[in-house]
Image 1 (tube, rainbow, N blue to C red):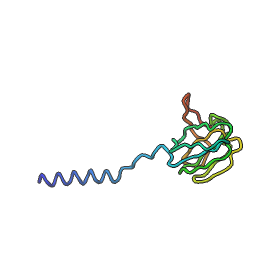
Image 2: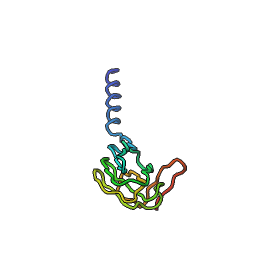
Image 3: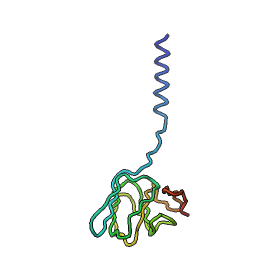
Image 4: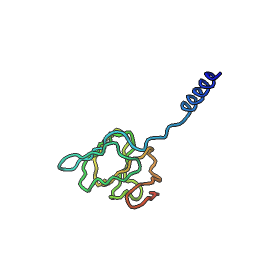
Length: 122
């Protein structure tokens, strides 16, 4: 009987493990490369909803991540994005100076983490 209780407990634990939902990762996977006149720089596995400042001299972008990249024409990701990049795409970058990686391509409201505060772009 003792063996039956151990087997029943093990089956219960296995059933719970199979039905539990793992939390989603909080980072993109892949590489985002931005090219300046003197070469390229990259962001590896960027965090979701984090504002990355790219600088004012960026000329070309490669989004080789699994997330949509929201591009802004300011350095703090405020307001609605100026453009979006789908995962695994490239584009020229006239005037984009910051980027946020987001799970979906809907830019209506993105909560952006930054060192000073949290704000919602609406």
